[in-house]
Image (cartoon, rainbow, N blue to C red; front, side):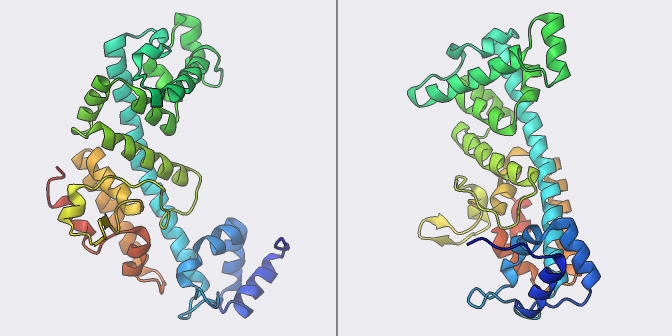
Length: 312
């Protein structure tokens, strides 16, 4: 069975009469549903306010509570995306610099499988990477800077090609590079271990996609766990068995990753902006307290102490 189409007015009546959602300003509710959609707003952000057994709203939840959570998530997406892009930009620069320093600027070098770590588990991925780089170098006409380099110099160096790669593609490229180049790139990010870097980049790619596609961020969890870090230990995050209960595959794991990959000055600004977003949320009409929200995001109550100690 499929859900039938219902009008905005019927949606509002259903929320009030069947779901016990308090709606005092019908015009505001109507405008919000038009701008965001029922699925994007209600289906996306109702869960913290719903009794899982009755599937009705509890604790006098009002329409504004859901909108406040949606707007918080929107602010979080904007903030996290900004700093994800900074890491992406630095990664592009670092990969192209160290690769070209070793192999030269000719585009044939990034198409040469011998310039990658051709161990058996990497071979299929490297072939796909080279095919994609070949398409960008020799066929892609979507970017004027590629066409210009191709026509004028008959060569597109990697520092140009990298700009046409997605975060996921550039992350894969890092995974397939020779180990000595990986090591130099990790030094640019503060001596991160290469295996940890690979996992960090996989997780950040997933979160970048969530932010870029305007999906729900605050409660998103990845299927990949970041490695245990000194930060987990210093914050005294409790464990379930041998696994930390938060900061592994939730939004707080991104904060931990930022702590390792962002310059200290950038991270301090990020943290200040994040605190401001949370403070603004507390001032809004909401019956979802900040400590409960922290649980959805995987934030320990003492998360602000993340900058009180060295990360290594």
